[in-house]
Image (cartoon, rainbow over all chains, first blue to last red):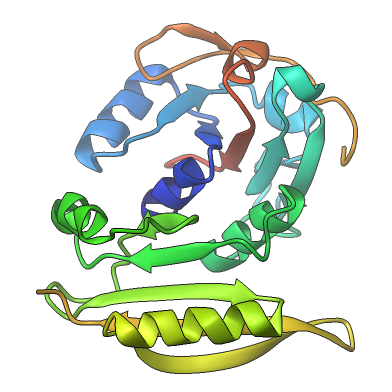
Length: 201
Length: 39
């Protein structure tokens, strides 16, 4: 969740992790892994139960929390659950890209996003500064990209004319188109996902 | 749970401070990730 955290924050969403652990263990984990987000202690899994993110009959005989995610709207907007995912098993969780897509959909911003993938967090400020026209989405530092490889940028565009002008603008700025993938909602095509790369100066 | 008001809670953070859901929601939406701990 560490890299995804910055995308989530970039979307204006706060992020916390909750687990059946004591605060001292959380403190140690947070420092060891250099986690930027808050870890909350749910020692009796009461909150996990209240949210239905609890496995009552774990095969090995121990009741434990299931991985679960809940997007909750601001207090101002009523604090309602906008999106939820509870794993059917004690292990599985949705991949980070899927989480971001679900958040964008739930927040009504699916077709606005422009992500920038940055090789390392250390380069984040420099990459941000390199954009005269900042992306409306977020910055991201995935582990699979090696330092120095370049910057990857992806966005989903629903409107063909808007996509056309964006494609031209990116080409003029030195971006290389890597893939274009149609996206579907059921049988209906809803838009295209464009992935661009550019080498860092 | 979807579309319903999220149940409030008070839990301790990694430094032992009490944190409520309502307080976290004052600044905007929140993604809460339940995971199964380090056992």
